[in-house]
Length: 319
Image (tube, rainbow, N blue to C red):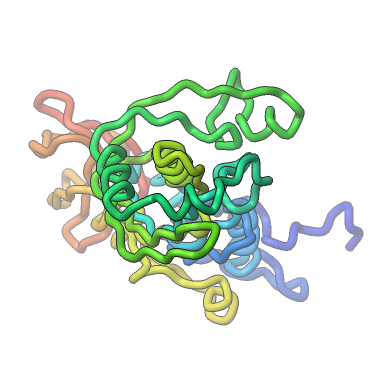
């Protein structure tokens, strides 16, 4: 077989891969919750998951910066259809903030743009830190980092910065539900804060570090970041890439994923048949998007009520 006709390493787009010329069965649909290692992009993780699971049908919900570790949600096979509907609007992080220096990227990977005097750093009291954290808790307006993934006229902000453009993103409303100080370490030229942040989607923890340092007059940046939860998905279900390579498999099958992420309604056989054909069915009386399950517990679709009837949003088990 020539390279021109050889199937890609992850298999055909339809599912099955190849091993020594023998077709390999595609994995079942579901979610893979990855404990992302540092130094990799989210796209790098997807590429490895495709290779380990032997399918090209893998996508991710949300992203993590290369320096960050922790929860990254991947959809596999038909579960990729879930990714755009998951309510991942609340996220939790463990982070280390370094006070005493500001950087171009608001994190440890950027170049230092300013460094505070040792006396200024020493003068930052515990009470000052507590007041600064309190001011950044609740509903706030936050300006994303210039090297964030926010799009400016269709192009990512970080791509514009790399191209030499000046990027000044407008502030936008976010919610910091909790901003808890866990530990304080004082060094000669810096103060390191270990914190827990529970926030809305779209909140940048490195921007919190930047703004806290600016408010205290000494500059600040994010030194470490670990995401511990995204919506209902936590590290408890996460697998490392090494584990996935050794034992390819999912964290949650399709039914478990829908049950974890959405309200559910169980229907009888006639309604299940209608759902499988994409037809409208009686409303379930639930708000928003919910999962529809067959009498045997098999997940059929995501649906939404529209008055007295419900319409399938995504049919997961078509007739």
